[in-house]
Image (tube, rainbow, N blue to C red; front, side, top):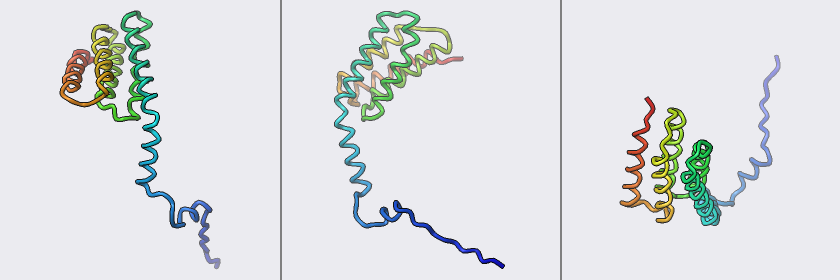
Length: 151
């Protein structure tokens, strides 16, 4: 009868990981966060540009503009998610939700969209800080969003 033999193969990566030294997870995370923070100003400028484009779409208020709101709001949320933008992320997500509900129901309300875009502008201008002002803005956006709940 044949005997089964098990051979353990140790890869070069496993050998390298087993060696002492290197960075701790905390150090790696700290360095990654520091690297990400170097891009914050550029990303905030990009968010500024997206808000400007959303404002232009609101001013145009055309059917073509309706179709672009969700995409720009989604881009804003994607960028805001990389940093601690608190209320800005929440307001952007609310605009995405509102736009989707309006597209689904076929009922478009530009003033509701404008309220969201103006809230984004105010939150961005305020440094994306959480506080009483941003809480009031977000509560208002929740009220606007609640009015567009599909049946």
